[in-house]
Length: 327
Ligand SMILES: [Zn+2]
Image 1 (cartoon, rainbow, N blue to C red):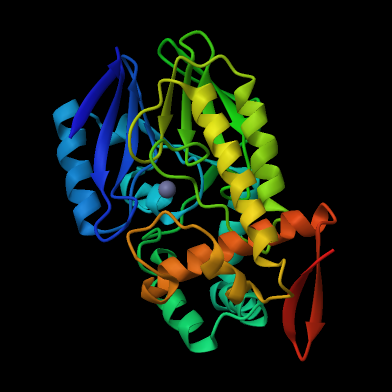
Image 2: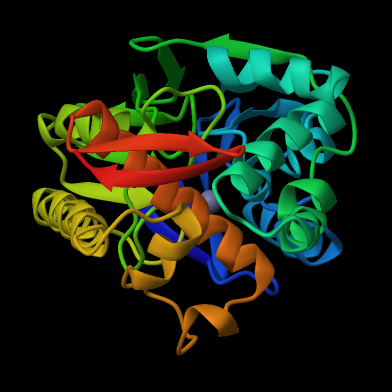
């Protein structure tokens, strides 16, 4: 499906089968000589077929196309290696380019370190193994190595009469990057801000306090004048300040739920996570599929880290198991 947004800017809806995200919004910007594709979909047949059909309808010549990846999650970067030609630039932020390179060299070691943190926080080892095996990152990544063109905060990408500023917005991922067009007041938001669902703020080995960075970067984007925000999933956002206030409130509520969960005594992350309100189509924690448990668990860890850095909770380690207390 293709939707025109502005002259020379359109949205392609790329299905994400079996993902609660439902679809990815990929955007195409065109000038007389060149195309820019923002985000791509899983490296998987369903995504690739829909992408090919859409690009053909739009008359996109991949030999004249560059690709901007808002962040390195596989629903955004997956097809970049398939679409890029030798004439394409594939833009990605600096920290995730570095991580893509080190992940390539030590994929197993990286995931094992992450798994160790989850298990130390109470996630059952066997479920952790299953969650990891089913994690989209293991199935739908780049089909080949890509030489990324690094973009930094404030860099400009020009295409036709679009002058996009790169706006660094870590939080959802370690180096997440939005694109802002100040004259047209358009923000390509990636997964920094979504409409019907809240972006997952997870625990990352590479980030000290992802939620703090996320909330700081919500304020950064709040300061921009935006007529329409184009998110990585679901519907377009016409009232960005309102959506940002809702997201801020959502995290305040979730932080409160964590504190309330600790009122009657210390708990592991696994004991706290089921007490949080999750916006998911399952009745209780036990019914969550392993991958959704993994995401919810990571989100709980990120909130605990934020509260710990604010001095509201403290952790204690006993027999390699981590418990949290109200400070
Ligand atoms: Zn996404």
